[in-house]
Amino acid sequence: MNFMPAYKTRAQYVADDLRRRILAGEFPGGTQLRQDALAQDYDVSRIPVREALLALESEGLVEFHPHRGAFTTELSVAKIRELFELRVLLETYILRQAIEHLTDQDLDKAEDILLKYDEALNSGGQIDNWSEYNFAFHEALYAPADLPETLALISQLNTKSDRYIRMQLLYTQEIEKAEQEHHGLLALARERQAEAACELLKKHIHEACEGIVSVLEKPVT
Image (cartoon, rainbow, N blue to C red; front, top):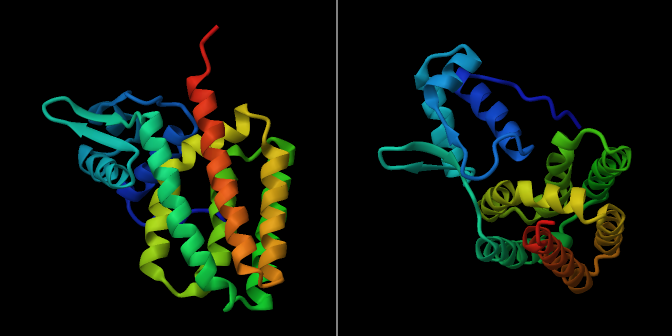
């Protein structure tokens, strides 16, 4: 699968690169994103920078404060739990609808993505691609449901959750567990065990959420 972006406009280029930098932790929550400095950094005018920031605002990664400008979003534990509970509701719904329509080709595509994801996780490299592989795997299982609006909402929720999923994988030593659950989910999908697959998916998302919360609530020593 090709994850290389195809830039169409300066605004898209700036948005994609800023997204990568925010999710990588280069701009922690609450960091002001000055349009003039970013325009100089990317060697563009302020117009594509503002368009990029508005796009990232729609994804929940940037907030505009009146008379102060754009800042990276700082999510609370309560918001994180809300995001992941919404993921449970939508993703178990779409998986239940998708399983009966999954073809061998769909399942093989999901497995191919999962093997690439495993390789990236186990090597400790390609951190920037972890979330892309993660969503691509889930999307391969969900797409046969043919519910594009639901899938679009799930995509938005995953974008908003991305930095926290990466934090969980990096700081809770849960990579092996996450891999096992993904393989288990694929196996249940192959067997068309919809209810068991949805229960595993629900557990997978809830435990990821609690792992992230434990990282955020850990006292600083």
